[in-house]
Image (tube, rainbow, N blue to C red; front, side, top):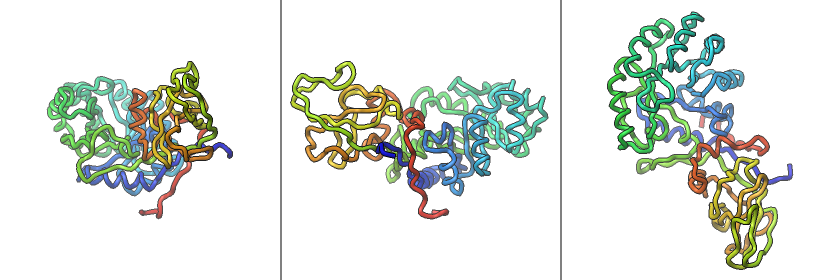
Length: 360
């Protein structure tokens, strides 16, 4: 293939991140979240690499779990949205999946199907207000679900503002969690941000998502760091000089204030690079960082390389990876790195860097 644009997925870095996060987790069991195709990184490949490092996986919907089962992943898989129908219950039971139950209608379906599971997770709404039973509904739900689960039910909840551990919302959720967490012998509250931010909650499981892939919206404790797993790369396809007052791209958003050397890079929002990227969004090169200029097109972006004369056609560029990081790029787009990595498109190939050994 001739176009140089691609994503590199470093499975070694993924496993190193998992070890770092397991160290932060201490005695708690670890669940790797591989929903949305492992946040765009390749669910089957990432789950295969992580299988010897984590205790279970989590996905959003049954279809994602079945794809992992079909690929030979045999660790427990939690389906975070639980069943969407009575028929879904039967599929989940047959595939030995763990359902996360968040509504009485789902409990009705389990009873109607007479379904049995190795383990059931029950979601409590402590303040996120998307899914989950209210705290006063937990006890009767546990009574109904206990006969359906071969092992102890895991009570779970989800932080709405884990990036701000001292926020009133986080404190309110922790208070409510403390009031219900003793209802079940096992619990799970912490996501990536809560784990890396060291929010203390009574629990036996943590659920690791974005942090596994090297991104973080919080600062890690001293001595800990994460490696980017995804690198978005290309090469300069064209270079031209433009004069003062000339503009670049659709709508002429960016205008040259000096005679400027403009590089065109064959990647755009058709590959997942955000159209919302503003002028000045950093693009990495071997000579240093250059600013994006002009609106992002479907297939191309443009950068001002005037200050780096060694750059020319064929020079490699990094749209996100080690430098700039995906979180840095996202900040220039008014969004978060989660969105960028999950919306990459199928036309851009992913190249997987394998582990150095099966048990490394």
